[in-house]
Length: 439
Image (cartoon, rainbow, N blue to C red; front, side):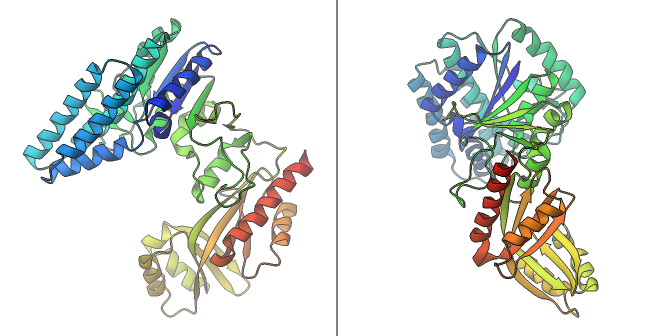
């Protein structure tokens, strides 16, 4: 069986839900058992949290709630399905908002109850449409399956209780070839109090259910055709990768890439279940398979960039002083000794960060400058030959540094902000050429 997760942009309106239904029906014919995990429609969770804050602070939330409600009722009308259950959930949500307005506060528990209605609404609409289209579909409340503690707004899952509940509730349905439609992001305590899993929780829900049900594959459907060799907004020649390792995905996510964050699919990683990233709006595209295995046909895999960062050249005592400051310590991307002292790279380049650097550097000679921080990752990126190739192709770009790291496995390049895109293009050319040579 497989688990299919669709994000907010994939279910943003009636046309998108029709597209999702076509994809699910096609996959159902290829696999024995399908669990569909949906996010709220695009923007809905943020709107719900805003409504909760408005109600608690005494501001008028009538028109904003009416707009959110009408959006979902319009989807029901466009899909030609009953809005009865949709209206029930909207009424429940409204009651929570009214209670917050009366009390003049919104506790984390109430925030969770309100925030979860986005997924309840989207899945209700989709399950009804799927069933009306002829599929054997069943709506399941994920709050019965995913059991958590009471750390509201970022609840911790009780894996054993979740394993037991998921198998008891979902396996009988899957055994009857039922397409299970359920929610991401939400769960509940063992006593049934609604919780949420935090941002990125829908991916985590899919990975968790896939792990519990021993899925063959977990599919993450979004609005891009997989994981790219580089951000295509920076390098137009970037291409989707057929495969990539969880280790390289983690590196890319750490350094600016807008990709699936590996921590959200940790249960899949632990069980060795491959995760495939696919495009809802280009379903024929192969997408990218993320697994525990390196693709040795690609010695170096991808480039990612985060900017602006702060690069500081100082002495060893100055470097230690900088790293001792809590606001800086948590953002240190690199700290190494050089021929002339030490180089420290800080992820953030805000005014507060610069002030903290200035204070920590008092009494120490230092040079601080804004830079772009780029990383190149891949199975053999840390070999001397690859590091030398990276350094060689950047020889003509002044004020760049090249450093090989083991944790995470990557080569880090810092470059002046004015050269950032140019350096990114050079490194991407090396990624493509090295893959061509290996093949």
